[in-house]
Image (tube, rainbow, N blue to C red; front, side, top):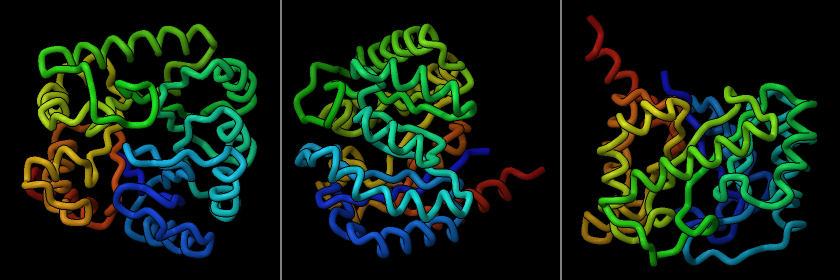
Amino acid sequence: MSEIFGILNITQDSFSDGGKFLNPEHAITQGQRLLQEGADWIDLSGQSSNIKASLVSEEEEWQRVSPVIAHFVQRGIRLSLDSFRPSVQLAALRAGVKCLNDITGFTHPDSQTILQEELRKRPGTKLIVMHSHTLGIAEEKSDLSVKNVVSTVLSFFHDRKEELLSWGVPESSLYFDPGMGFFLGADPELSFEVLRQLDQIIEEFPNLMIGVSRKSFLGNVLGGIPPMERENATLAAEIYLLQKQVPWIRTHNVLKLKHSEKIWKLIQKN
């Protein structure tokens, strides 16, 4: 059964909902809504990673997320922090976050020290190792092609897994995200090829996290429709992820996914 990560962007310039939840009260209300809709986790971010995003200071990133983290940790809610900055990751772990989601795959020079020290104190903490062709914020230009995208992603996963295990991170703590949309490149076929080859990816890395929600590759093949008009396309792709039994799915619209999951399961029932 897939676990659902509800996306909570506490940012000014996220591609589909930037600016909506910068106020801590608004962010908390949205987080509560995601939980009521059936989210198993809240995946929150204070720094956008889309192609047009501006970098904020580490201090501002932490100020954006810290009151929201405090609110939900006090209530025993499982939180994931989407951040590539070790200082922010460290503060979040110490504040009670149970999962770190890093678009750079924990390649920062300071990652080793932080993870070795903090995960020893916090067994059970999960790490989402994401692939990005830039090792960071998304960009349109990419050297990936349909022929090499899956092998490149798998090679990155193997390299990161080997290094993280050498740091003493338990294998059970590791989840892997192939990155979708502009994290692979502007060509929608790159993302669709990853989806087509999910069986191969899952065979090698069964602990998988995938987020297709409102992504560019869905809008681009539908005439360039904007993010908020990609809900139907998102749901089609997410039902496919359910069929492939992807363990973790990251989405903006939890309720639609949970409703679809229930109907899909009833259809599959013997």
